[in-house]
Image (tube, rainbow, N blue to C red; front, top):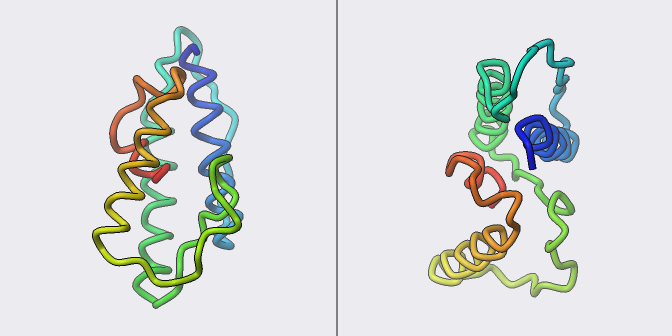
Length: 116
């Protein structure tokens, strides 16, 4: 996966997160010419905006909706509130599942955290 493909994948995830949480989020076409690394100042700026909007919603007491953003979301999970230990285990399992994807192995950890 080249840098442009990584960038497109990250943008798709961000757009889904924004859509699921009713956040006005526009990803402008990249004007960079040359070899893309998949991460740039424009990309970091978009990430900061999305993170701040999600944080605002959390601070207002709204839940963040990530359902359906990732293909391994399961609809039939129990609706019982999990313990903090169960949450940590599930987070680790999701991280391991993400790391199985060779296209995501070299993404910076802050992007992986966003996917969890």
